[in-house]
Amino acid sequence: MKGYRGRFAPSPTGALHAGSLVAALASWLDARAHGGEWLVRIEDVDRPRCVPGADQEILRQLALCGLLPDAPPQWQSQRERLYQDALDRLAAAGAAYPCSCSRRDIALAWLAQGRARSRHGELVYPGTCRAGLHGREARAWRFRVTEGIVAWTDRRLGVQLQDVAAEVGDFVLKRGDGLFAYQLAVVVDDGEQGITHVVRGADLVDNTPRQVLLQRALGLPQPMYLHAPLVLGANGEKLSKQNGAQPLDLRDPRAALASAAATLGLALSRQGTVAEALGEAARAWRQRWP
Image (cartoon, rainbow, N blue to C red; front, side, top):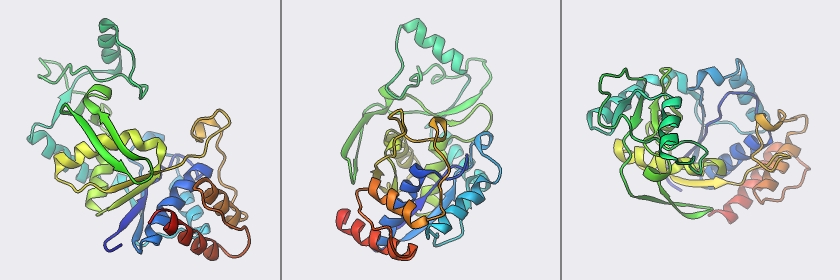
């Protein structure tokens, strides 16, 4: 596929585990199956959550699994000027505005209206500061969501629909602590790096409509999306460090890759070299996701 460029964008909150290897492998396979480039971006914009040295451990784990990027990795913490430039553009266009509300303010507003949390588990922003701060001090910046259904098509899950205004509301672009939010950073990064295809875990499906709105507002192309299956923990939820995910055991990288491939519906033998395993997986992926 001419011009294909994909990426894997882990957060350095710890070492890779079985679930994150599935996401890394899926994105690598899709790039290789389509003759494209594969990049690695360290999403360390949320600095308080980052673990010192985790970024280098992630890169080491990827290398052991034969998942080597086609260009030097980039770090979000070194790209904050790009995020501020994008926020300034949105603000100048009236698509972003300052907000003085704390989480408690939002919760009290919703309690007064007798409304429940959204299906995302968060309170939909009630639009308190949409018409101005009225003398209050700005804490964060929000994106002004327009009404209407956002429709997009996932390569695995099919047509997806979301009413972002009703289900999410005006979402944060820059937090009260001065850090840029994931939604803005990922859209700016994907646009600046020329990402054409995003392959990531299915837990991020609900984020995509917000990112599509930001892409439109910033005049950026919309990548094609594929949200891969998740590895589940013992509690039936996405495997994560919060529910007991352990760092990958890479004494046998081929076995780890075979397990990740199985989650993606690909059967690999556990014999041979890592390079042979990846070649076998890429051929199987090409047949499954042409």
